[in-house]
Length: 254
Image 1: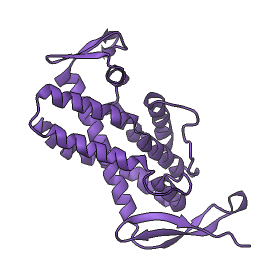
Image 2 (image 1 turned 30 degrees about the vertical axis):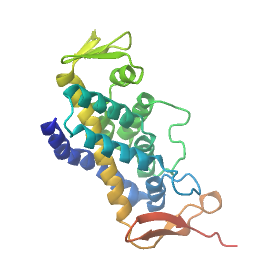
Image 3 (image 1 turned 180 degrees about the vertical axis):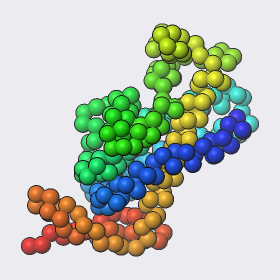
Image 4 (image 1 turned 120 degrees about the vertical axis):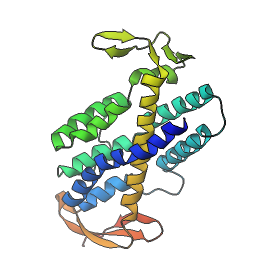
């Protein structure tokens, strides 16, 4: 899988290239709401409560394991585990959905998907919002890797790896051509491209989030719709050279 891992490193720039214009547009439209999206504001929290930190660590750990001397089937199973982890992570969907909102002048939303659950529905909502916001490539990113059939088969242990075949046992099949559903697809031709697409997406997302946080090196005063009925007041973004963006503070006048 060495050449494939090298390919991921090259493709990572594609994910950043697609997401960066959206991030920049959101920042230009409303920097405070953009910062709320970067921080994924949920209220005051202590250390050890950000699942994105653990998600990033698991991706790094599993990628390191895959590059060690292991049987190819063992590497594939680890890669499938990583695939499901990536497509189930809530933070990327949450951030992208909110960036699309902010880019259109709307405000950061703690629950941008309402009561919707599961990656398939979230992706559908993101694709619709991305098209409306003029960033269709953002929605199309998910088409490069998401497969509910692979996700469900692995998550429910309803699959068998047999040679180069990924066989789905009793679950949702895969449309291999218009109108043709199969429960057996090539690992090399179908499964691995989607795994590597998901890894590409995750690495690109983590990198652009890190870059965006570290663009803030010192406190900055910005306008924020935090007053009564959305009145604009000033808020101070809190940052430092080591950790980048930390949070914000604002005081309503008495």
